[in-house]
Amino acid sequence: MRISKKILFAGAAALAITAGSLSAQAEDKPLNSIGISVGLLGNPFFVATIQGIEDRAREINPDVEITSVSADYDLNKQVSQIDSFIAKGVDIIMLNAVDDTAIAPAVQRAKKAGITVAAFDVSAPGADVTVMTDNIAAGEKACQYIVDALNGKGNVAIIKGPSSSSLNDRFTGCMDVFEANDGINVVSNDQNGGAAREGGMNVMQGLLTRYSDLDAVFGANDPMALGAQLAAKQLGRDVIITGVDGAPDTEKSLKDPNSLLKASASQDPYVMAGEALELGYKFFNGEEIEETTVLLEPELITADNIDSYKGWTAKRD
Image (cartoon, rainbow, N blue to C red; front, side):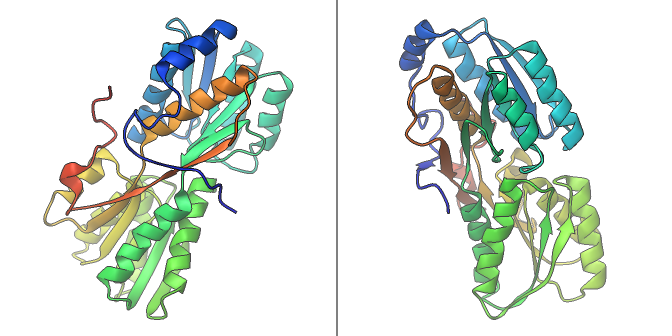
């Protein structure tokens, strides 16, 4: 069952708590240190999430100590990072879980140590607060675009990613749409592109070699979708591709009239992570939180509306 609260992406103004209220909270309990663990620092998505956390945190305390580390989609590495944050005694751990199930024991250790755990982008069992995109809706929107473009009939495939709630939910939303259309034939939905461009390219090469009549592909994130596009262009195949993220490279691709990547259900990582920090700080202060899980509504971006899209690198007020 999905949590009911949804917030449209409207930049930093969409955040539920103002800087003034944050200052008032800071008088009650100072925020001295934050530990951030993300899936992959090389992904511009996570660069934007870290910026969102840092900006919100420094509104609370300009001198807050912030440590950001990359788990590189390695569960053991992320567990070690969380244990290091526990040993350091940070106030809040901002967690982008690389495995939405197996991370649970580490989260519990942090909570037992009195540390607030705020999850963002993906869920983490036991996290005190969570803010993420409505990823089921993202998968639905990206794959409905494919169904519409194919007039409800064609051979399609899904490129999955590592096991995380966000990628799994996108898969679920996409499959729901495909299964609701009898003319859509899903030829492959179990290939893992590793959430990376190279992985998406490798999976796509295999798909195109195996299926000569493949019409469309959904990549569960933009790096995999962009990798799939590269493979299709190398092999001279005309395939409709969609993804999820609204990444900077996706913006460029959607403005290219020769792009095979036709749509992406966008996220706002800056707002998402910033709100997760704010909710985490409220919890840290013992404040009552009506909804501990917040879902943000994705926007489908295409060549038709890309010029009005406020992307990840847009200037923030």
